[in-house]
Length: 109
Image (cartoon, rainbow, N blue to C red; front, top):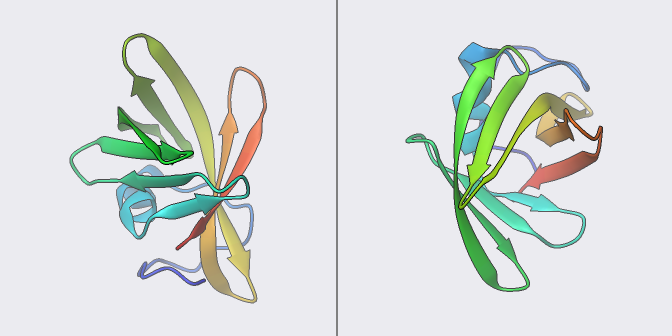
C-alpha cells in the first residue's frame, strides 16, 4: 500500500535524508514480512508488536540515512534507512542493522 507521505522525488533504495526521516518513519504503521507491526511517533517513541505482544522503545535521527533505536532495558542499535519505491510510489522502508547487516523491509499499512 502507498503511504500518506508527502515526500520529494526518491528512487527505490535511496537513503532517507535526516530532514525527511521523521516524516518517513511516522507516515503510517509498518508491516514486516513476518507479520510484525511497528509504529513510530514524532516524539521519538516506537511500538513493536510481535505475536500480539507490544514492546515499547525509543528512536532518534542520527544522520542522513541512519537512525538509532533503544529497547529497554539495554538493547541499542543503529540502522541504515532506505526508501522502498514501487512504480514511482513510496510503499515502505528498508532497515539494515549496521552491526549485523540484517535487512528488514516494512511496508506502509
